[in-house]
Length: 115
Image (cartoon, rainbow, N blue to C red; front, side, top):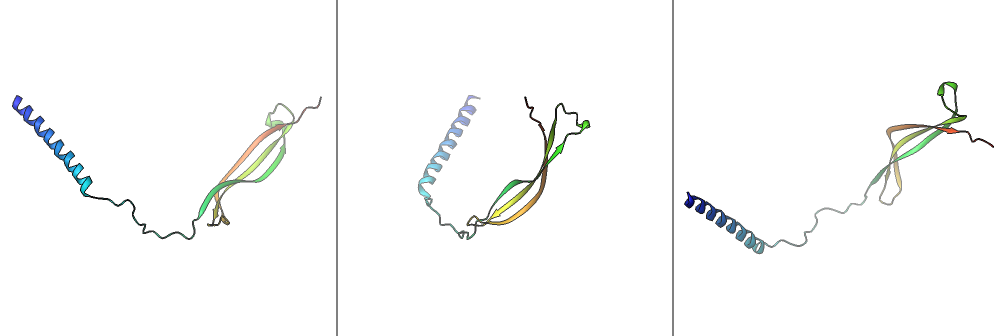
């Protein structure tokens, strides 16, 4: 039993040493170039795009009784749309494309109390 364990351990160590020696020898025999010439052609136009949200409209709506607000004031309703802007290589806007995303923001502005 002890001979088997010793034989297996010795075989494993020998195999590991052989692998290490082959890696060291391979790294010295195979020389990799430091630079490789690119086969890609330089792009004449590098398009750039970004997504922005623009406010389309703002409306002030007076309060109603059913709004259940505690003070006098008014609602402000803002309508926003999202657009994709595309630019050319010189940074000029070439296209403005609506993405279909829209948002409506409503908030309450109380009237200022005068003393």
